[in-house]
Length: 158
Image 1 (spheres, rainbow, N blue to C red):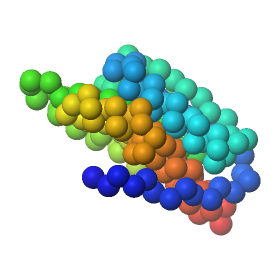
Image 2 (cartoon, helix red, strand yellow):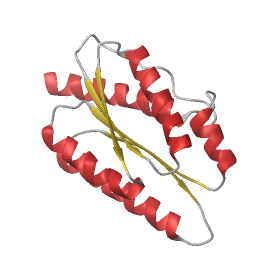
Image 3 (cartoon, rainbow, N blue to C red):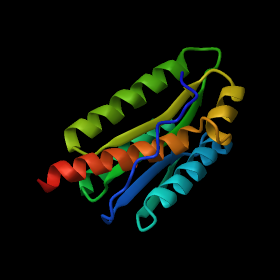
């Protein structure tokens, strides 16, 4: 996995709304993702509205993402969560289920869903990707949200 985040996108002056759906499970790490994502969104699109919706765990993220997508007033939805591998295959099954559901919602509703529901093996990986600034996946999710929002905004304006 690359340790380099994608370059910062250039944002237009369009009014935007971004939604974040974040799991409360593994809260310390998910809050790190949320904090970094919000900071990057504020930096890239200072006038944007940002709503944050918290759900119990990663499995509940897709149903809330779907409700937001149905409203069709959001440039992108950031799904943020942390799934840590245990001694069974439950984490793998959960991660695949969430990923598949998020992709289906994005395609069916035409709303970008940035999947930053991380499936990690160790808490060390979680610290690196959620709390540290160098390879923070919250920052990357925000950049992806702004970038795809620009692409779709341009396409839909034509």
